Image (cartoon, rainbow over all chains, first blue to last red; front, side, top):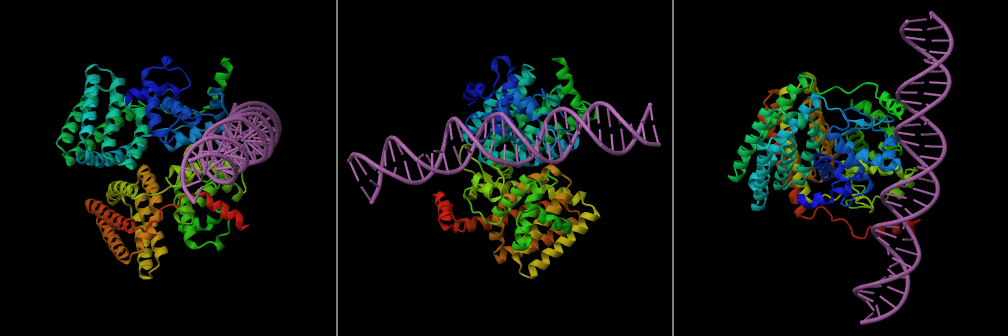
Length: 272
Length: 272
DNA sequence: GCGGCATGTCATGTCGACATAATTACCAGA
DNA sequence: TCTGGTAATTATGTCGACATGACATGCCGC
């Protein structure tokens, strides 16, 4: 499945894929899966939404940065109407904030919201993993085993980016196995919001160790259809991941968004 | 709080409130709280979204019914752009579906989706109630006690509509007490989707009895800060509510959406 | 020199119009 | 009468333009 989506990825972004790092391509694909769920064909709106969304979770656009609709319209050589709609899609996923009569900007993730998201994710994901442990099919298990192998390979190779995306794919496959599209959509949306922080969190070697061990344990629980264990494992892992993020926030690892955002535009104009 | 929001309700709907039944007003207010969360001032978009959303949850517009943007634009005497945006807002809440290049229509709730929603709601609401039992303030308890009294009064008076809205308010206050805005937003959205069915479910006297008893028990658990009990009570109640809905679906209580939806428009045009 | 107010500039929200895709209506043939 | 293909019609997606509200700068009074 990954191969086919990869083949089509280039039709979803305006710039040629060769000029983009592989991680950005992954980001586009994940955003597409979530934000442009129903847009089966690459429309103008979903293309913009995917690319801007990917830029946000790849930290190319920073927290609080302005997303002027005229600026984006120029860049994508289109009118403001599709841009507006794309930004609305991203707002729905929590990546963008659009105050009334004010410039849209990249949503700022404060620690309080991260806490809330992880609390919800822990509970919901626990239930989903529990269901998955019961309802899983042999095909589910096969796919999960392969993804675990990918995860392990990335871990051994110390490839942070590969580990991160394999992680995302593993969770994605797990939520599919639970056969609850509603829960999956919510979890996907919550994942998208915190994806920006994932790299920070997983950049700690101890965190990666713990995460890898967690996945192995979780896989065992799924193999043995031990639903309660899967539930508890997921919750525990989320608690640990949150603790790491709390530490990062406390250490000031998240730069607070700059104040007068207007100056950036002026500087850019002056540079021309 | 209810009073002040009531006072302002008329500015959010185009038609004078006197011509609307009270239940519709409640629906508008609830939709506004959820869908137009950030739109603090009554803009054109939120007004349309609130009114159409209220019509959907009040079953004035039936499942699968077309929501042509030109038709709505005529009705609200505006252009199609704000209508489009309003429909996008409602799609985000799951009340409307907008396929590409096809007419938007009222989302159809099949039993499978209802099952999924109740599963998610049970788990998430259980966690939220658990948190609320721990974090609740005296003000929270006071508000909840008053709402329980309203619920009880409506129950004694056999006022289905009043009971339904008091129920919504009770849950709303409970989610506030848990101090988790993210969880609240998700639960609100899920509530909105199933609100159309609530009247059906609560129209059964035995269901109302059970529901009332449940609320009393839940209130006790909150008073005693018994978090695990609150969790289990909520889950159990959701399970029971779902069982009732399963029965209603099995009995064909939900009319399947009509096929050729176009005929309605023609009939309406011929009537003029 | 500094704070508050007026003014100018810019972006947003909304509008009407057009091209294109989808859907209906029509018609011929079986 | 029903079915299949084609034409007409309608609605959607997109566009450029305009009015109103927000922000920044500059001015004036203190």
